[in-house]
Image 1 (cartoon, helix red, strand yellow):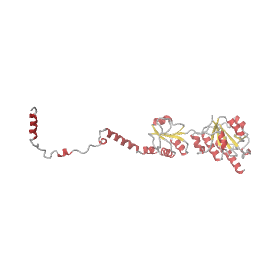
Image 2 (tube, one colour; image 1 turned 135 degrees about the vertical axis):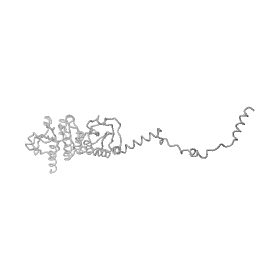
Image 3 (cartoon, rainbow, N blue to C red; image 1 turned 45 degrees about the vertical axis):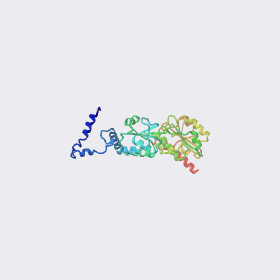
Image 4 (cartoon, rainbow, N blue to C red; image 1 turned 90 degrees about the horizontal axis):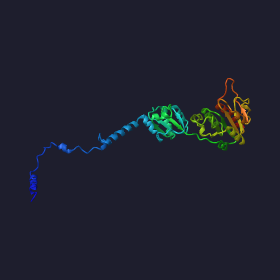
Length: 325
């Protein structure tokens, strides 16, 4: 039958018997090299390269600078966005603002920043206040403020009250402080602090040509701005008229007045104290609207008193008269 010859040849070959052995010479080779290593343990495998990169990144994150920043980062703001609100820049300025608990929206820190004691305390305070902290490229931080020293604090816009709200909250006899063109934010903050200390119901200021409640004013108030209602008015003369209708006696402070503070016999009545600007004093129309304009006697060798100091003295005089009454 066709094909039988090939089958017989195959059978005969199978009956030759076993071939000669190696004498154990290939035993170790036959034992094998164990299980195949994991992909991440093979030096040239992509998984191993990814593992090495992750370990290198983890090593960088455990450095003192990275650890300080990462532990103090409760949340992150979107990258590339300019902080909203007023900007406080510089290590000392940011630290002072955070120490005074100035309302803020974000702390921005440069990635290459050298973490000194001021930066470390700023990060700690921001974490305590629950403030978002964002790391950014040095160029981004310096683009916002060239003198930032690698750290910037964004301040919330101040929430102003209104004259009507202040009058509703005022207790009899009401005491309100109105500012006629005070332009120094530190003076503004100091006046707010004195107003709170001597029981004023609120502070009024004009919207134009006057200081606003910036971070500097907030710091100068030593936290009083958080408790004291502060209002901006478009026209101080009209507001004075409204105060008179509410029964307030309007007293202006002006160093040029011939009437001194001792002539103020209405301290126990509802009063609005009007403070002039640092240089020009009371505006002409404001002065005409006042029921009484007084000055504080000082030494002839001193030209004038700081606006915030004069306000403090007047408020102290009113407070003392009310305590005696």
